[in-house]
Image (cartoon, rainbow, N blue to C red; front, side, top):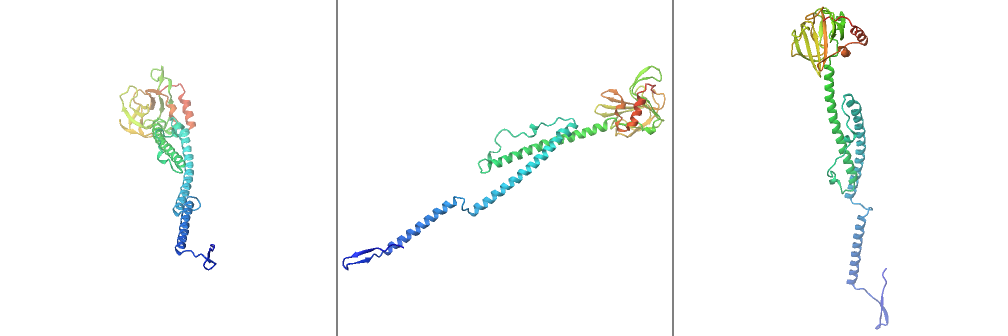
Length: 325
């Protein structure tokens, strides 16, 4: 409550109350309201620049930031899972797949190498969460690079597998005459007695005794490069080029079931047992060549014989008896 002021009136010899002028009262009221407004604005500005009061837009932005932080946390967990899966695939790739197909493993440094040169993440700098965003982006880039390297590696493994499959199918790995059609395994690879000169002579194949007309089968995939009677001693014979340096030869046949240039699969019927050429009795003389050297066919029968059958064949093939050609 404002103080009441008085003055002494000499005319009446008494104290009279001082009445303020109306204009002055209005000015004081105006100054009071102006000061209040200025003070209120100042207080509002100060409050808006503190964490005590947030505008609706700021509240919305804060919610967005928290949502982004949550998304980054989820992304971080997903990247950890992806990195674990990739590490498992890379381990199997290096230590199983590439080892099996005799390919060099991919070094760890190559798989997880970063990116050199200019600063790839300059555009991400200068923000409140720049460190987190840059670190996450770098991890994603490394993961993408790992996946690209792994994808190329699996493409290479696929090609190696296809080649391996072709190689395994091409190797002359089965007996060219079925066991039930055999009379006996007459002679094996090695030094044998010549049936005509009785001299000791190197026998470069295996002789399978069987009745004339017994079916003869291709021992591996390949291409018929000869089916003729133009090679001394072999009579009617067939040669199959299996690729990868392998060739198989089937001699003393009675007739052919294929022609030159024809492609055959392992187990295809190619001809029949006979006794043409330099032969003492109906039989198949069978040879395997590797890089132009004749090698023991016995080493390739993993595709058609049981262990017991192989042991029996090994026993008879190693006997130094007389060959039939």
